[in-house]
Image (cartoon, rainbow, N blue to C red):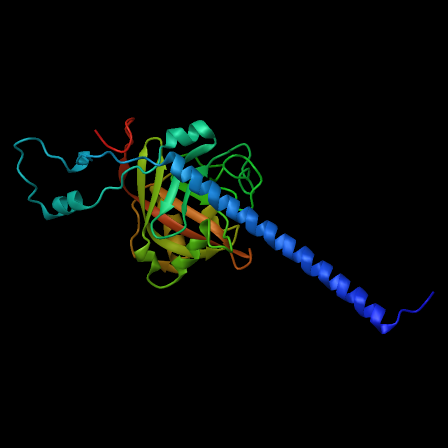
Length: 283
Protein backbone atom coordinates (compact mmCIF):
# COMPACT_ATOMS: atom_id res chain seq x y z
CA UNK A 1 0.00 0.00 0.00
CA UNK A 2 1.41 3.35 -1.03
CA UNK A 3 2.23 5.63 1.86
CA UNK A 4 0.60 9.04 1.78
CA UNK A 5 2.85 12.04 1.81
CA UNK A 6 2.26 14.93 4.27
CA UNK A 7 0.58 17.05 1.59
CA UNK A 8 -1.95 14.34 0.82
CA UNK A 9 -2.64 13.79 4.52
CA UNK A 10 -3.21 17.51 4.92
CA UNK A 11 -5.73 17.53 2.07
CA UNK A 12 -7.63 14.56 3.52
CA UNK A 13 -7.71 16.06 7.03
CA UNK A 14 -8.83 19.42 5.64
CA UNK A 15 -11.62 17.69 3.70
CA UNK A 16 -12.77 15.75 6.78
CA UNK A 17 -12.68 18.88 8.92
CA UNK A 18 -14.70 20.78 6.34
CA UNK A 19 -17.25 17.97 6.22
CA UNK A 20 -17.61 18.01 10.02
CA UNK A 21 -18.02 21.80 10.07
CA UNK A 22 -20.59 21.63 7.27
CA UNK A 23 -22.52 18.87 9.06
CA UNK A 24 -22.55 20.83 12.33
CA UNK A 25 -23.67 23.95 10.48
CA UNK A 26 -26.58 22.10 8.90
CA UNK A 27 -27.62 20.67 12.27
CA UNK A 28 -27.49 24.12 13.91
CA UNK A 29 -29.49 25.61 11.07
CA UNK A 30 -32.10 22.85 11.35
CA UNK A 31 -32.42 23.36 15.09
CA UNK A 32 -32.72 27.13 14.70
CA UNK A 33 -35.32 26.73 11.94
CA UNK A 34 -37.31 24.28 14.06
CA UNK A 35 -37.32 26.56 17.10
CA UNK A 36 -38.24 29.59 14.99
CA UNK A 37 -41.10 27.62 13.45
CA UNK A 38 -42.36 26.84 16.98
CA UNK A 39 -42.22 30.54 17.92
CA UNK A 40 -44.09 31.49 14.74
CA UNK A 41 -46.74 28.83 15.35
CA UNK A 42 -47.48 30.13 18.86
CA UNK A 43 -47.60 33.70 17.57
CA UNK A 44 -50.12 32.68 14.90
CA UNK A 45 -52.22 30.86 17.52
CA UNK A 46 -52.21 33.89 19.81
CA UNK A 47 -53.36 36.11 16.94
CA UNK A 48 -56.01 33.61 15.87
CA UNK A 49 -57.52 33.31 19.35
CA UNK A 50 -57.06 36.92 20.45
CA UNK A 51 -60.24 38.53 21.74
CA UNK A 52 -60.61 41.92 20.14
CA UNK A 53 -61.73 44.66 22.51
CA UNK A 54 -64.90 46.49 21.51
CA UNK A 55 -64.74 50.14 20.44
CA UNK A 56 -66.47 51.26 23.65
CA UNK A 57 -65.56 48.86 26.46
CA UNK A 58 -68.11 48.68 29.22
CA UNK A 59 -67.45 48.72 32.94
CA UNK A 60 -66.62 45.26 34.33
CA UNK A 61 -69.53 43.60 36.12
CA UNK A 62 -67.73 43.29 39.43
CA UNK A 63 -67.17 47.04 39.83
CA UNK A 64 -70.74 48.09 39.03
CA UNK A 65 -73.25 49.25 41.64
CA UNK A 66 -77.00 49.31 41.45
CA UNK A 67 -78.49 52.70 40.50
CA UNK A 68 -78.81 54.90 43.57
CA UNK A 69 -76.56 52.65 45.70
CA UNK A 70 -74.21 54.28 48.19
CA UNK A 71 -70.48 54.15 47.38
CA UNK A 72 -68.33 51.65 49.26
CA UNK A 73 -67.17 52.92 52.62
CA UNK A 74 -65.17 49.85 53.61
CA UNK A 75 -61.51 50.53 52.64
CA UNK A 76 -60.84 46.83 52.03
CA UNK A 77 -63.90 46.50 49.80
CA UNK A 78 -63.00 49.71 47.98
CA UNK A 79 -59.45 48.49 47.39
CA UNK A 80 -60.77 45.19 46.03
CA UNK A 81 -63.10 47.02 43.64
CA UNK A 82 -60.25 49.23 42.44
CA UNK A 83 -57.95 46.27 41.77
CA UNK A 84 -57.70 45.65 38.03
CA UNK A 85 -59.68 42.60 37.02
CA UNK A 86 -58.05 40.30 34.45
CA UNK A 87 -60.25 40.01 31.38
CA UNK A 88 -60.20 37.11 28.90
CA UNK A 89 -57.53 37.56 26.25
CA UNK A 90 -58.14 34.40 24.21
CA UNK A 91 -61.17 32.64 22.81
CA UNK A 92 -60.64 29.21 24.38
CA UNK A 93 -63.67 27.70 22.64
CA UNK A 94 -62.10 28.61 19.30
CA UNK A 95 -58.82 26.95 20.28
CA UNK A 96 -60.67 23.82 21.38
CA UNK A 97 -62.46 23.73 18.04
CA UNK A 98 -59.00 23.70 16.41
CA UNK A 99 -57.68 20.97 18.74
CA UNK A 100 -59.87 19.25 21.34
CA UNK A 101 -56.77 18.45 23.45
CA UNK A 102 -56.51 22.14 24.34
CA UNK A 103 -57.97 23.14 27.72
CA UNK A 104 -56.88 26.75 28.05
CA UNK A 105 -54.19 29.40 27.85
CA UNK A 106 -51.48 30.06 30.44
CA UNK A 107 -49.64 33.37 30.81
CA UNK A 108 -47.33 35.29 33.14
CA UNK A 109 -46.92 38.99 32.45
CA UNK A 110 -43.41 40.18 31.50
CA UNK A 111 -42.21 36.64 30.76
CA UNK A 112 -42.15 34.34 27.75
CA UNK A 113 -44.85 32.18 29.34
CA UNK A 114 -47.84 32.86 27.08
CA UNK A 115 -49.07 29.59 25.60
CA UNK A 116 -52.03 27.30 25.08
CA UNK A 117 -52.09 24.31 27.43
CA UNK A 118 -53.04 20.74 26.57
CA UNK A 119 -54.39 17.70 28.42
CA UNK A 120 -54.24 14.11 27.19
CA UNK A 121 -54.86 11.71 30.13
CA UNK A 122 -54.50 8.60 27.94
CA UNK A 123 -51.24 9.84 26.35
CA UNK A 124 -49.52 11.69 29.23
CA UNK A 125 -46.57 13.10 27.26
CA UNK A 126 -48.18 13.50 23.84
CA UNK A 127 -47.19 17.17 23.58
CA UNK A 128 -43.67 16.78 24.93
CA UNK A 129 -42.32 16.95 21.34
CA UNK A 130 -45.44 17.86 19.38
CA UNK A 131 -46.90 21.26 18.53
CA UNK A 132 -50.52 22.44 18.78
CA UNK A 133 -51.23 21.04 15.31
CA UNK A 134 -49.77 17.66 16.28
CA UNK A 135 -46.62 18.05 14.20
CA UNK A 136 -43.08 17.27 15.37
CA UNK A 137 -41.72 20.07 17.57
CA UNK A 138 -38.65 20.53 19.75
CA UNK A 139 -40.51 22.93 22.03
CA UNK A 140 -43.72 20.95 22.45
CA UNK A 141 -46.69 22.58 24.18
CA UNK A 142 -47.17 22.97 27.96
CA UNK A 143 -49.50 20.28 29.25
CA UNK A 144 -51.44 19.34 32.37
CA UNK A 145 -50.47 16.25 34.36
CA UNK A 146 -52.53 13.29 33.17
CA UNK A 147 -53.76 12.60 36.72
CA UNK A 148 -55.25 16.10 37.03
CA UNK A 149 -58.50 17.61 35.89
CA UNK A 150 -59.39 21.29 36.01
CA UNK A 151 -61.19 20.50 39.29
CA UNK A 152 -58.06 19.11 40.99
CA UNK A 153 -56.68 20.76 44.12
CA UNK A 154 -53.25 21.06 42.47
CA UNK A 155 -52.99 21.69 38.73
CA UNK A 156 -49.52 20.57 37.65
CA UNK A 157 -48.34 21.90 34.27
CA UNK A 158 -45.13 20.82 32.54
CA UNK A 159 -43.08 22.73 29.97
CA UNK A 160 -39.54 22.64 28.55
CA UNK A 161 -36.72 24.84 29.79
CA UNK A 162 -35.59 25.94 26.34
CA UNK A 163 -32.15 27.47 25.78
CA UNK A 164 -33.64 30.15 23.51
CA UNK A 165 -35.65 31.56 26.44
CA UNK A 166 -39.04 30.22 25.37
CA UNK A 167 -41.54 27.89 27.06
CA UNK A 168 -40.95 27.57 30.84
CA UNK A 169 -37.34 28.83 30.86
CA UNK A 170 -38.59 31.99 32.64
CA UNK A 171 -39.22 29.91 35.77
CA UNK A 172 -35.50 30.07 36.57
CA UNK A 173 -35.98 33.80 37.22
CA UNK A 174 -38.05 32.98 40.31
CA UNK A 175 -34.86 31.82 42.00
CA UNK A 176 -33.54 35.39 41.84
CA UNK A 177 -34.22 37.81 44.66
CA UNK A 178 -37.38 39.82 44.16
CA UNK A 179 -38.68 37.99 41.10
CA UNK A 180 -41.26 36.11 43.18
CA UNK A 181 -42.98 39.42 43.79
CA UNK A 182 -42.45 41.18 40.46
CA UNK A 183 -43.97 38.25 38.54
CA UNK A 184 -46.43 37.09 41.17
CA UNK A 185 -49.55 36.67 39.03
CA UNK A 186 -50.26 33.70 36.78
CA UNK A 187 -53.38 33.64 34.61
CA UNK A 188 -55.08 30.48 33.41
CA UNK A 189 -57.85 31.06 30.89
CA UNK A 190 -60.31 28.18 30.45
CA UNK A 191 -63.79 27.88 28.97
CA UNK A 192 -65.34 28.90 32.29
CA UNK A 193 -63.33 32.11 32.60
CA UNK A 194 -60.06 33.63 33.79
CA UNK A 195 -58.43 32.07 36.85
CA UNK A 196 -55.95 34.33 38.63
CA UNK A 197 -53.22 32.73 40.75
CA UNK A 198 -50.68 34.36 43.07
CA UNK A 199 -47.23 32.76 43.38
CA UNK A 200 -46.23 31.91 46.96
CA UNK A 201 -43.26 29.53 46.56
CA UNK A 202 -40.49 28.46 44.19
CA UNK A 203 -38.40 25.35 44.84
CA UNK A 204 -35.73 23.11 43.33
CA UNK A 205 -36.78 19.47 43.61
CA UNK A 206 -36.07 16.13 41.99
CA UNK A 207 -38.54 14.40 39.69
CA UNK A 208 -39.67 12.02 42.45
CA UNK A 209 -40.50 14.79 44.92
CA UNK A 210 -43.66 14.24 46.97
CA UNK A 211 -45.19 17.42 45.58
CA UNK A 212 -45.79 15.68 42.26
CA UNK A 213 -47.99 13.19 44.09
CA UNK A 214 -50.15 15.90 45.60
CA UNK A 215 -53.11 16.17 43.24
CA UNK A 216 -56.10 15.99 45.60
CA UNK A 217 -56.39 16.90 49.29
CA UNK A 218 -58.68 14.41 51.00
CA UNK A 219 -58.74 16.51 54.18
CA UNK A 220 -57.45 19.89 55.45
CA UNK A 221 -54.51 18.23 57.21
CA UNK A 222 -53.37 16.66 53.91
CA UNK A 223 -53.45 20.07 52.24
CA UNK A 224 -51.53 21.88 54.97
CA UNK A 225 -48.99 19.09 55.37
CA UNK A 226 -48.12 19.20 51.66
CA UNK A 227 -47.97 23.01 51.56
CA UNK A 228 -45.88 23.30 54.72
CA UNK A 229 -43.39 20.74 53.41
CA UNK A 230 -43.12 22.68 50.15
CA UNK A 231 -42.60 26.02 51.90
CA UNK A 232 -39.97 24.61 54.26
CA UNK A 233 -37.91 23.31 51.33
CA UNK A 234 -38.51 26.26 48.98
CA UNK A 235 -35.76 28.49 47.66
CA UNK A 236 -38.01 31.51 48.18
CA UNK A 237 -41.53 32.15 49.45
CA UNK A 238 -43.93 35.07 49.79
CA UNK A 239 -44.59 34.25 53.44
CA UNK A 240 -48.26 33.53 52.70
CA UNK A 241 -49.83 30.12 53.25
CA UNK A 242 -52.89 29.39 51.09
CA UNK A 243 -56.01 28.28 52.89
CA UNK A 244 -57.54 24.84 52.51
CA UNK A 245 -59.99 24.86 49.63
CA UNK A 246 -57.89 27.14 47.44
CA UNK A 247 -56.95 25.71 44.07
CA UNK A 248 -53.19 25.51 43.57
CA UNK A 249 -51.28 25.74 40.30
CA UNK A 250 -47.79 24.29 39.81
CA UNK A 251 -45.48 25.02 36.89
CA UNK A 252 -42.64 22.54 36.47
CA UNK A 253 -39.58 22.51 34.22
CA UNK A 254 -36.14 20.90 34.04
CA UNK A 255 -33.15 22.44 35.82
CA UNK A 256 -29.43 21.74 36.12
CA UNK A 257 -29.19 19.84 32.82
CA UNK A 258 -32.21 17.76 33.69
CA UNK A 259 -30.83 16.55 37.00
CA UNK A 260 -33.43 18.54 38.95
CA UNK A 261 -36.71 20.38 38.50
CA UNK A 262 -37.90 23.90 39.26
CA UNK A 263 -41.45 24.22 40.49
CA UNK A 264 -43.28 27.53 40.89
CA UNK A 265 -46.47 27.20 42.93
CA UNK A 266 -49.37 29.63 43.13
CA UNK A 267 -52.78 29.76 44.79
CA UNK A 268 -55.97 31.01 43.17
CA UNK A 269 -56.43 34.61 44.19
CA UNK A 270 -60.17 34.97 43.55
CA UNK A 271 -63.05 33.30 41.69
CA UNK A 272 -62.65 33.09 37.91
CA UNK A 273 -63.89 35.93 35.73
CA UNK A 274 -66.39 34.28 33.35
CA UNK A 275 -66.06 34.53 29.60
CA UNK A 276 -69.32 35.51 27.94
CA UNK A 277 -70.20 34.47 24.37
CA UNK A 278 -69.80 37.90 22.80
CA UNK A 279 -66.13 38.61 22.58
CA UNK A 280 -64.02 40.72 24.90
CA UNK A 281 -66.63 42.10 27.28
CA UNK A 282 -68.67 41.05 30.27
CA UNK A 283 -72.42 41.61 30.37
